[in-house]
Image (cartoon, rainbow, N blue to C red; front, side, top):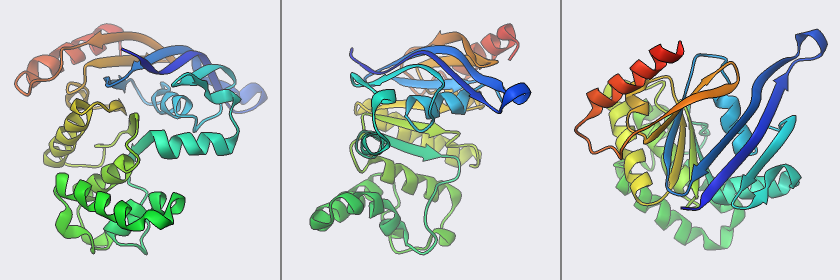
Length: 252
């Protein structure tokens, strides 16, 4: 299986002089095509910073990040933006949707910026995605008129508009109740089954239990990982037990 992203000896620090602190301390990681991975660890361990570094959203101090064979650190900001827009999808804890646009327009906006002449096809694709995730009837609603789970579904639709090779999720279920969390994770599972790699940052063992590889971070390093079989929908408790046991063993 081909490698989508390779991170080699990544170092990232914040602050100046005596206040300078390494958030990533020589992290190396690989993500394969179609893989479903999660990153867990305490607050401040470097989980989100690692995700931002691997996606080119955060400039690193040292190391190398390769995406589909291209060295992200050697690219211009415009080239990086093109890759993020056409090859990557992003889903955050709080969807970054515009209040002055309805749900449909929020989903199609990034794609329309690139290809206004193809507006009809873009809208058709967005509507198909909305139907697939169960929010087809909400296309004309304002973002204040829908639930958090529905907003997150809209964010997932927007992330899928460019048929990305990988989706990055930074605590995508962190603001949702348990029912919405399960529904969103079901969507991620279906997206992954279709071949899209997914990397989730999460503090929730039940969320991580849906993935097939969990990386554990502590003090800016990946200190261990746990590999699980593809989730079959029936063994969640056993998977959670394995994850929490590993966290206890690592002191996380």
